[in-house]
Image 1 (cartoon, rainbow, N blue to C red):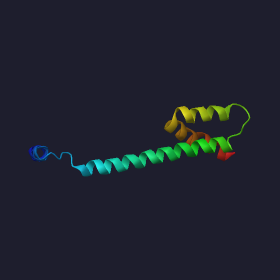
Image 2 (image 1 turned 60 degrees about the vertical axis):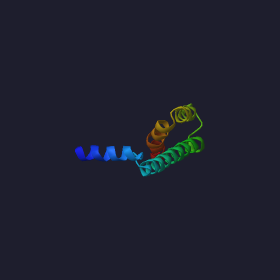
Image 3 (image 1 turned 60 degrees about the horizontal axis):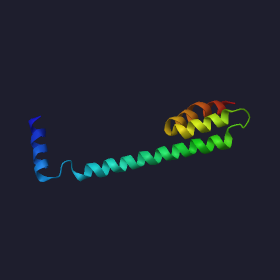
Image 4 (image 1 turned 30 degrees about the vertical axis):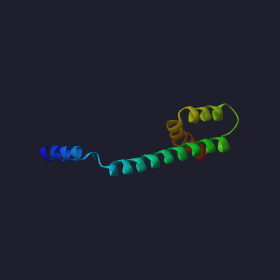
Length: 88
């Protein structure tokens, strides 16, 4: 623990704590996760609009779920409804 404290004190004295590389790697990972989330959301929305049957209110309900709960709604649609539709 003392070694960690000494390193923190050293970096704080240098004015470079945490190192800039930490922010670069964290930023790149964050950008990748956001892009994956956007692609997943768009895929679910397009799949729902193109392939969901128009009779009844299922299509409207799923579109609203995907729009108002973007990531959770897209995951629910792709793993629940899409699988059920693929079985039939």
